[in-house]
Length: 189
Length: 189
DNA sequence: TTGACAAGACCGTCCAGACGGTACAGTAAG
DNA sequence: CTTACTGTACCGTCTGGACGGTCTTGTCAA
Image (tube, rainbow over all chains, first blue to last red; front, side, top):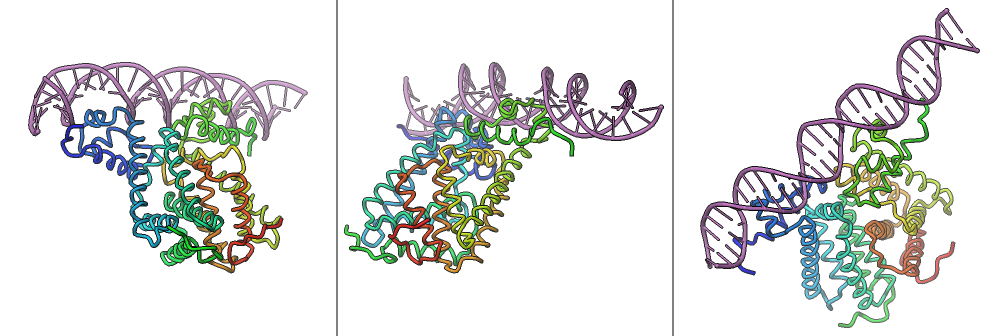
């Protein structure tokens, strides 16, 4: 709880993600992470006493970040439409050239149980969407199409052109806003 | 040309998938695979001279299998609708309780380049779909929703109930068959 | 028919290197 | 004095894979 020299934890987390991307998810070694973070191995193990803890922190850090971004995006979104915010935020992430995604595979390789927090997150998010979205079928379509795009970006399948992707995103947004199918009432806040 | 004792290659491939699922994708060792396949390590290395070759074979085997299943599904499908066949085949795979998917993570952990054949496959499939599907927007929606479901099944995110999944699949099928918007009417067939 | 030979298919062992983690002494800052 | 490290040395384990030997099967001349 005292002050770290510089914020070592965050540096290490970022370094871990970098190493995973550059050396491949299966070659994430503690030595490499320490070196990359500009930290001694002792220092690394001081912050994360075990590799598993590092992975766990990586997952939790990412989830927290996404959560906050989602809340922000929602505020910026018309009528606080959660589904639309989700689509928009996800689309923005897919545009980034350097997907910081490889670390996930490292975590899975280390131990598939590290997916559990993500599972919970995903489930809760979907439940919220279910509660807030009037047209359930539209939700299903939109949500899974977004997940499909996420999957494509994760595995680096570049199937769509820039143009096509934008077209898809705007389709999704209009479905999310309830335009494609007859909708009983606009989402109330 | 010559006769293998029993079909060792296939046994090894299956064993590798099993071990990946049971021991975790990061713990796929040659010894474990050999033991599981009822083959000595030497015998394993004879069939697949390196671990990388094993992984490659795993990927190619799977791709070939999927390709054949898709062609079959298409023949069984009304009007040879490729998109509908794709939806149906994928939906069938998602229903299987025991997703043989973990081996993919092993391959990625070993070397992310093993995704390349899958990328090519995906791209070619999408091009075929593009050529054969009149409504491009409907294709985008359907294709990525299917990929989203595949992703969910791969990571074992069980967000949907049985009922909900069937509802989504039938929505997708009706979109695939050329009904412009997702339709509330129950799909036949 | 038989025996010799070659090649294919597989076994079992050994090893060098990598990796996670420990231990511990030192040190700069607050 | 405590916190937050650095740096070095070290240990035990696991793993890919090289290697040499063995068993099986097919071929073909005598």
